[in-house]
Amino acid sequence: MKSIQIVRKIALACVMAGSAGAGAVSVAHAVGTPLAPPAIYPPNTWQGKATAVVRVLDRLDAHVEVISVPVGTTAHYKSLEISAGRCLERPQTLSPDAAGWLELHDTHPDGATFKGWMLAAEPALGVFESAVYDVRMVRCEGDNVAPAAPPLPTPSVPVLTQPSGATPPSTGSDGGAGGQAPSTGAAPAGQNQTPATPEYGGEY
Image (cartoon, rainbow, N blue to C red; front, side):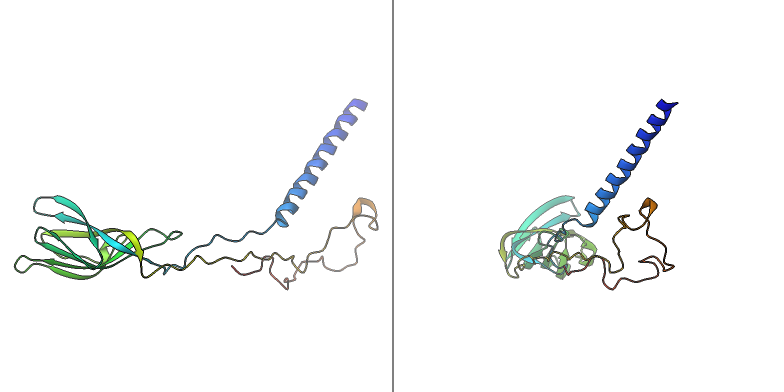
């Protein structure tokens, strides 16, 4: 009989120790060191590049050619003239994309023409309507040119604050058995109250 009581006491002690350890872990997470968010560029940021790369499909013979066109020059593919006015790409930290300001001219009689932006990630926004050629923007390459992407902003570390309605747990020195303070009839702290300040403040 005594051995059963001893086993029960040991099991109860293990349960209480585990609960105390879990509470310590949760408190450690709650008061951990805040970290700054990762630095990212604004979504409208572009970096100029020196060369536009396009893919040309000849619908008549199914031949595909990838052509590099330096900005400010004109490249030729069969009867097609390809001029690149600008080439912009997304900098790091943003979704990859490239945009080229292109002028296309099929020198065949009544050949199609195009002048405008073509985007690599959204080819349907700029379409060269030709029965002979299909032209797609692929990427930008070469040296960096204007416009230049600005330096990455330095995010600030958020400031962690404690909720104004939080109260420390009772130590049991004045609370009688079980460490509970005598009831005063007042509502427990934190109920039906809105903290004066948010739990996590600061600016990114």
